[in-house]
Length: 301
Ligand SMILES: Cc1ncc(COP(=O)(O)O)c(C=O)c1O
Image (cartoon, rainbow, N blue to C red):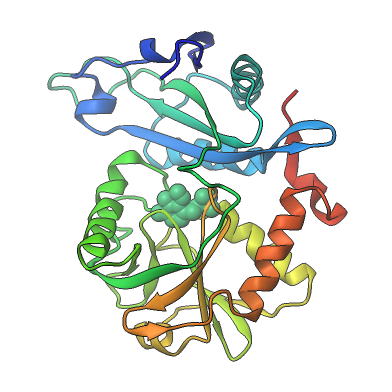
């Protein structure tokens, strides 16, 4: 990690290596951290954030759902993002915002303090490959998505990711790229870090909110599909629907749309016609070739 990289931590830009917490901090030892990740894109008018307003609303909501409060207003965090982008000379990449109880908490579970906020700039790289979506393989995970009566699944909370970690690990051990989780009700939920869509009878389908994270890319794909006349439906999806789907793809803020080329022992056209149309549409949008969606971007310089 270069000495040049700066992290915005509680209002100050500090060297990346100094952005740390005590091992016994509540955030680390109890997992009380929430976060957001969104894309930055290079437009003719400078660097733009993809739907930062939606991401910051979700960050606030995550805090609220967990009975926590951020130490900084949305306006201050937006300013922090702008400063972080400038200080790191970020172009195409990702912004990660982490909010957490950074103070030590040996036995205390519920703290009165507000959440610290850290903002990281992560440039695109060979490893990230943000603009190189490739077909992936997916399996049905042996794990179920955490039930919404155990923790709020609408909160983007770091501790919820042990569930996603287990699903991804299970997938890797079985030779797949991602694991798709059913809910404890047996219906499709989502992937470890991605929303899941299927095409069935020419209709784009994805599970309704309530048991899954409210993905911002999911929202964007639904809105973009409606704008171009692709029929969409948010409805409960059965396990067997996955085995009969004409197309399957996943979405998340990093690589927007990833076509599934193999689901369990089924080979699928990847991308299929609707997935391809959506990949091209999202590519046009994020490369500023489609004026209909310019309100999705916020300038960062
Ligand atoms: C569990 C889960 N579902 C879905 C998503 C996709 O959400 P978004 O499109 O906002 O990145 C994520 C993103 O990290 C996730 O962690």
